[in-house]
Length: 71
Image 1 (spheres, one colour):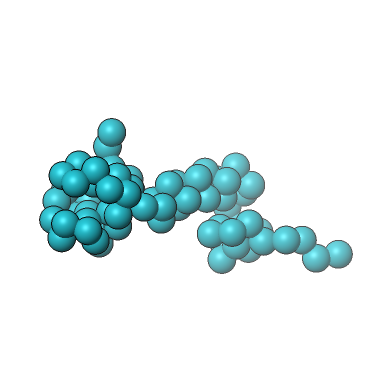
Image 2 (tube, one colour):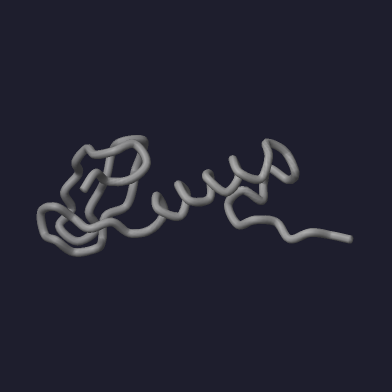
């Protein structure tokens, strides 16, 4: 019987355990979703690199949290 892979953690297969893969998915979901810009308040901020964020609307580049913007 084949089991369904879990979204982002599907690349790990059966390794590392269920709980760690669920936590990884929670962080990835929050990281990949568009964040709210502190300058123009539009939800258009994407993560460029670890701790570096870029607003697609007002073109500002700023620092924040490593995985998601601190609120």
